[in-house]
Image: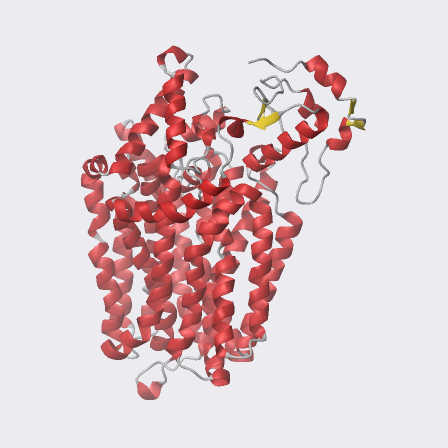
Length: 609
């Protein structure tokens, strides 16, 4: 393999097909403030000969302003805030709708059970939307998918205001949920695109609260709006909120997905010079869009039903997520039922304030993650000298206990004869335990399945969204038949039944992993790759078998078609090598198996020493 001549490149930089090289420099925009002069890109000595058989192989330059990992810190955090608000707006939309249900009943008739379906249909979109938006973002980029999907989210929210009948309201809710799920699928990927492993913990900790904070805020905003102005203003507020976020995305959101940016650069170089340039990963294995979509749609189900670890923890998380959305139907029953029939008689707006307990708990969980659980994780690794996936599980143990305490306390104190502050206070341990459990379990699944993390996280996401959609639908019947105490206790019993899972896996997890096909396979392959990488970094390449390592990469790419071939390149920059070489930080969810998903899903806990 030859190297491009810098002398030839400098000559070409004067005129390329009669066009000055400077004309190929990307234009600055608010969403693209940092560009690399095209002359600098062209003059870099790339490996290769510029032919179809031996193309020039491009990657980010050593000093490259367009590299998302090298953007200024302020600009990186601007993107994180945008991604977080995009997620928050969608999560808030899922529950704010409940504030308009009384006026929907007044205008269109129907029943509480029927209108609760508006929550379920919206959350149902969370189950299937990410299976589409995750792979499309890897083909066409994060930015364009954000903008297109948010446009349609805003459109369906706005059209809902003019709904002529009750059926159209629910249809528009389902469509809004489907398109609105895009940031849930891709916001974590955006963050992992731009933050190094050292920065990821704080970024993901701050972002991770959005999917839980939004549902808690929704009944508060929607409740007061619905009470004062009716359901149309609830949808109107959601439309305005989403439109503001859409404008911010159009003006300020940057494309962060490096493979897409480098493919575009390779195309520009080829057009300008007449030579053949390829993004490094594409040179090894061209992007297969069909395989990407097939994998995104089919493989999560395979892992869900064939891997006991994935199934057990996915059911656990799905039950807790379902309980969260069950509360959007249960709280109105507990707090808004008229006093004449044994309730507290709160108005719709005041009833929404009952969710403040869950909201406070979610916020406290992030503080606990940063200052308590992460340092504890590092101490466990330091004590043993190396990490194990089970090191992620202790927070899941006490997170599960917090959930049971919160649910049991709510069931015992939700009657009108007990002061109203008691059931709200018990929302704090539930909210706190829910987020802590979620982050710990996601970390465990990613550390267990490493190269298969994308499929595992997608399986978990689908199942929990299905539960989140289903649980509100039977809440009213459950409360009618069991009463407010036993109906509220039943979710607590479910959470209690799941409680032993992290304890058992903490003790027997290593043995169980060895007996699970994909968990054992992932561990063996990942260890082999890391050994080859360590040998290369140590300058002892002879100790590693390049052909064997390449074969491993190829076999994984066939098994996990949307795994990023970047993982197997032993000449990556140090930051990527550190991220892939250490069990690193920790999550909320992303989607191509090693590059983005593994970075994301490990991002909530700091790197091991």
